[in-house]
Image (cartoon, rainbow, N blue to C red; front, side, top):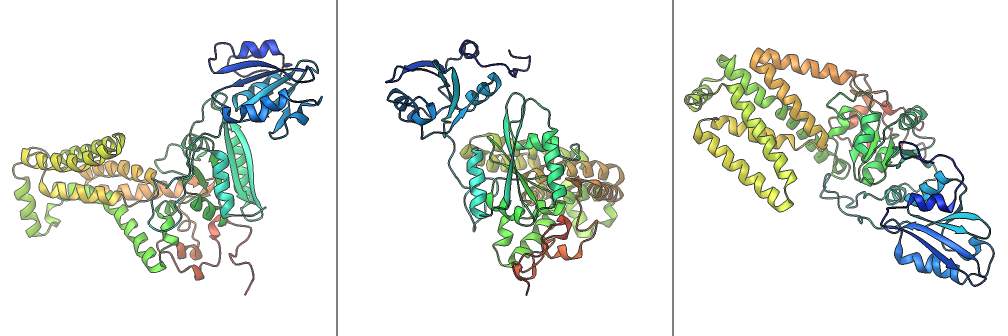
Length: 482
């Protein structure tokens, strides 16, 4: 029988019940075949889930020519599993297996013949780099595991499989290096995955929403990546990786705030170049947060702090504007977000055209119509470009929301409001955790040795120890003590 959630109970499997289960399923097939020794087999499968190209050669033809009494002896090229319950039969059927019923022996088994159709290995579109590996994850879970194992050919690299979602039956794989990753992280992640009780888990972001310690924060507590080299590096320093079936994005944890500013290219470029680029990212993050709120604070409350020559330019550009600096900035920032979202939703070529032409036309029209000053248009453009230097897309969206909060504080309290907002931001970051680990480490709590890969990326020869904040079981990164 079947309950209200569509989950089959543990009842005995019968041909009649299975026929009813596949009623009104256009892609389901129930076929009878007779072998040379007059045995009759019944095949039940979902045509859209199996590899039809192999159906005849791997199952039907061997059965038709079979002279053995045992099904396993007839079909030796495919994985065969004996089944005895209706729940197990339905699970196998919906995962791309063929159910075989021996009418004489009254025996049920399943033949794994899942359709391998899927997207091939392609270049990452969200974390593009000039040098380094070009492969990325796909929606195929087994393929994603393979990409990681090729980089870490270790028997210590463990993978635990879970199933979540009463409707989707989504497969989750937890990967870690035994003897290196802190067991506390593994236990916490394992319990969090097991505690997920939701009917549909279709993406790794949905899984992260149930596993995060603070799901009301704008800051992600898992690193989302579709690059296998990033996952391999994370596993090598003592983190764990979570792969979700049917999505190309993996989750790495635990992370801290500063991991969101690191790029795979940091460990490919020379350390001086990588350090310079990382500092640029931090400066760009601060620019994207503070540039527009400071403009509003200074022009509204602290115009006496503006140098005289710049003040003359501001007065001239704002003399004909009907809106206050706050409303002027708010309208332009919202318009910018609309253009950004529209360019993402449009087809690729059209989206690029919309982004460029839309920004130029709207900006020029806003100035000529008297809704915005030339100075603000320049500042909004610099702020928008600076926000894209952060490698993590989720962090970019968090920056936008924080910018709006600081803008409101600046309009009411001026520079003091911005300082209050920054203090509250630091307090919030210090209170966050990722898998129960402090989010603002290695600053709070302080781990001095981890600063070698914080604001700068030190030479690889100096990074002999794994990050202390991850509490790895193997501290040193070289195989022999020198």
